[in-house]
Length: 112
Length: 115
Image (tube, rainbow over the protein chains, first blue to last red):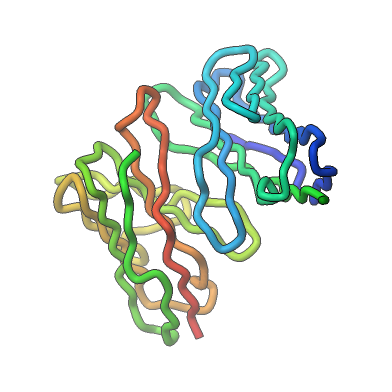
């Protein structure tokens, strides 16, 4: 069974610091990786996607993928209180199969 | 990305009844999916809604309990049948097929409480 694992947290980070969120997955041939942000009572919002080894930057967010070690991470620079949310890691395991498998999510709290 | 709406946004239902949830997209999309998010948990895929054919269900989910329709490329329904309190959950539809890598985008969700 394909699995995606995240530390459930809560992860507390001071405002202005870097928040680092990690995710590991079980299938070495996984294709695509996504980070969603979910505010309490809201639906998940896609914030980053990454497909190749290395870093991908978008504003204050950087996704890092290491397929050999089977992990993907999300860095949030200059953390703001509005970044407080649950962050869900999702993996598309097979090319041509659009099914997403989600981790349990990491609850992030930014402390003013 | 497409604008996705769901109806109802929330409902409280009695045990043994059924509820149909609608998902409407403002543009044609190739793929639509239905997820469940139980309280305090992550998302679990129920099924892929296929246009013009039966939905593809994930392990643990059956058509009799969660019948799905997809009459066209902008609309789908999920019915939760013969409900029990264990069905209390948030039900989310998502769409994919518009981005280069078929990223999935979620509707606002339907919060269901079964008494």
